[in-house]
Length: 355
Image (cartoon, rainbow, N blue to C red):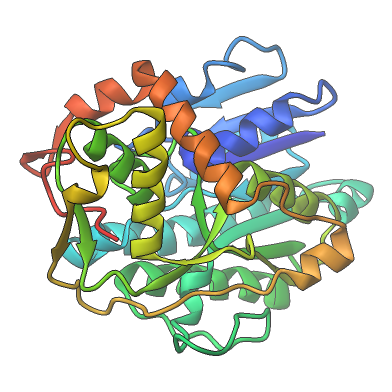
């Protein structure tokens, strides 16, 4: 089984590659153009395995992608490459349209040309798995409702709009051209190797460096949290066994307000690496809310649990504690990233990544 993973050097993509590469019967083909959030150090554990290979290529380059598909005789495409940070999408929406919409369109075209030339038996077993987000559904009231696979799309940010558009293109290529596709929409991921501009690693590392812990508004916005290793297992199941043309919502059944998440991190750090004097909670800083900030996300994962036998193995408490342990032990990975400069300011010195 030859599986191509786009964005395999990113946070979720690298977790998928590490999971798949454990199986010697699977050849993992990682296609990643290594933008700021792509890091081959996240794949150090598998980089020398004979069943893993990385191509430095852009999903927008359909000629290069088609060549890789043919050369590696790909059986499954798992499309995770995306621009994914909401704050960045507000400042620079064009990059999100280019990668998430145009990139998906060109990847679909290359994949369709490849698939059409396959022998009949290979066509029947081929899969294109498009990985998306719960943010395409918009938001929910604080006190009721949950996202299902039938929830209408109502994106609020340039990021979620670009992902919604890519979802529609994938479905159109299935309905119009017969490309065998499956889709999945996930809730907020967390875990090891998470790029430090995102909420949980940002708060952990800012706390360790005695920096402010920025929280938008009053911190009342709610997110459903999913450990990245649980997500990777679900993605493999969807890619391998999901029903063609259908989508699967993947969530951790772990809703928390943003302030609760930040406070939980502070409380764990107070025990694992006590701050003298006081608590890490003293560093919490409330800042002006961002435009179009969705109130609440909540995913119903019943379909993937029932149909594919998946269930999250991490509770939020156990997953958060193990994630903090990982960051405490692995400064070799995040230290160089914290030193990088982009956007004119040192990472962690901005409000970027606020909850």
